[in-house]
Length: 239
Image (cartoon, rainbow, N blue to C red; front, side, top):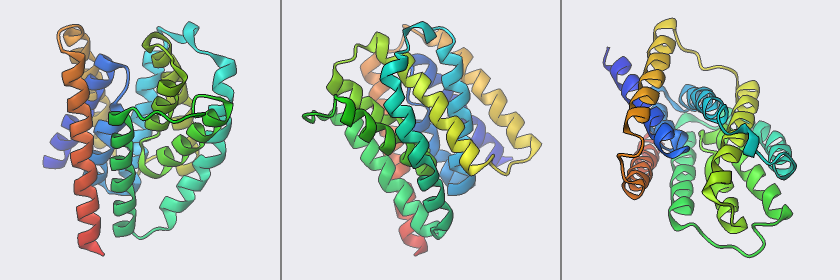
């Protein structure tokens, strides 16, 4: 019962954040889901839910997707997702927790700093960002930060960034689930997660325009950082 409540709370909050900001579901949900369900099922559930959320968000903005620009991201991610899945499957759970938590902390740092890197906004940068995102998504459930970093350096306006990020989210999460499989959850857990995702979206729709963007961004990064640090601590304790 406690696990169901925790699962519902995590997915609902992450779904609400995604609806409000157009991104952030995985950063909020993945660390908490890993702590609740373990690194295997936690990451896979984050992949499944993030894919559904991205698909729903893409429905209203698919016309602004840049298909030609997205080719290198998708191609690189398709190549690196299996590597991330293979790596995660072969690491002992404590080591995987440390790796997962570290990747989350790195992702938060990259997003928070909005780092400028010469050349990252070009074609080569797209391949690097897509490859890094694919690996991180399969191994840790957080594949968006490299894409965000690329968009910052390429000067993409938010109006174009969001639908393209959602398109990338759909593709990379579908490939991640295809490589890693579905999480081994019962009907009850799937029902709780689905209902919570819907509830979070409804609450997010009601709150749209009423929550300051800066405050929401800080909340997303703060929650993700706490989850990453806790995961690292749990992994170190289990070594």
